[in-house]
Image (cartoon, rainbow, N blue to C red; front, top):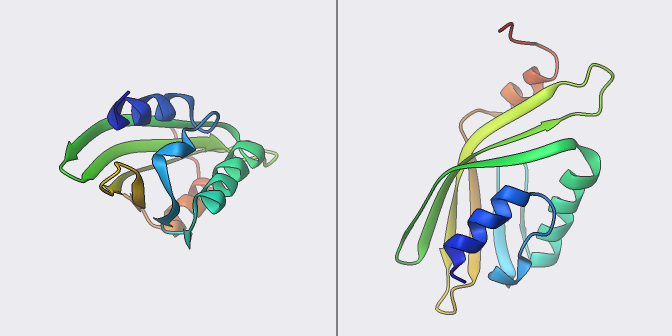
Length: 128
């Protein structure tokens, strides 16, 4: 199975049963909140999302590969375990870099909003 298909399936079932074997052992990860190396640390971050937040979901909108770079566009959403149960959504994109063995050696996430916007979603509700 090719890496694009694996990623599509991982996004559909996120955050459970992720395919960590597609990542290099010392993968570099960065997003607006974290920066670290190692697939074990990456697993810990995904497990934190799965254990702490309610109904986490990762909607994949687009995925494309150009040589050793894979770009994805997505929306991550979850319900924060606060008494008023706010549903939070972050849209963004990822750039994944592959090595010669087609393992992901770098996973960098970018958000379409800043960290303060995410915090505001917990307290200010949009009326629909």
